[in-house]
Image (cartoon, rainbow, N blue to C red; front, side, top):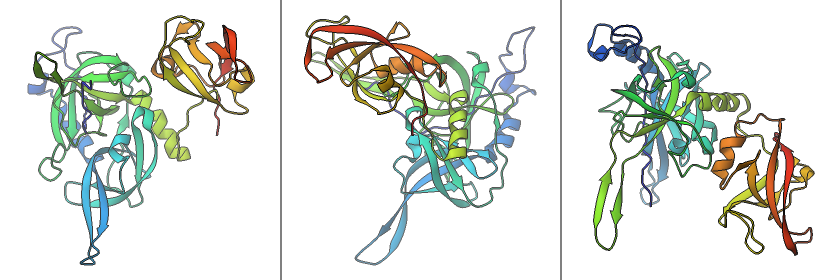
Length: 366
């Protein structure tokens, strides 16, 4: 049962620099003369824009050509060559893209590249943009309890362009918050109010530095069984992609026009099964469906139908489990994978399955 819903959202995080006594955050900072929010909003808001999805339709009866909006989100100006950072889910179904400002100015935009697994995308405009790229911070320096705020355009771009809202960092390293993602990303959790139209915006600290890209909100789920039914509503559960994840991807896209991860040359699917190897039942893990020629996997001796059960001795059951470990291993550094093998080289079933540990290395494979 799906227990959350992804919403388009834009967030900006604000860290408190004021204190009541040594090391204590002043509770009323957002109401005090030292409130940093107005200055941050004035500095950063021009760099957060509406990213609109449009489609052009020709009416065969009238001969008219019309352009219609089909949704959208937000984007952050990150490079003075015309590059904007956003979420992939904002742009994935777009026919055409436009960057829009509060005064009605619109720029034709194009998708440069994306990484679907982390929901990161980069778009570009060719016209000169009268704005300043946002400063890049570090999400690794965030702490739970820091004051945050959101700048974005919820619901209606004309009525609510770049609305400001506030909250705190509620949690860090939420690797399992998005169970539908193919990769494990250590998400930032916030408690602020967010709404449709905000995805792809800027999450900022008190220095006005970009520390994340908001992309998801838990809303609720409908529950029903033979005896009861109910709708459970979640409150103030929003999540952002850390800039330490998004920024290197964006830089690669800007430089190369594409983002590829290093790998060891196999394609896998998750399979169910027992915890341990049984004679007639492969264990739960990742079954190899294809081995790329010339890759590290082929050189190590991996075959189709092998089931990966461990990485560097740690049990893995799914591809997400695998990414939690492997995404921290640098390209070129050898590591071990343990497999269960049930077939011989001709594809015939072995009389007795075997377990073996092989050494592979992550490589950039075109």
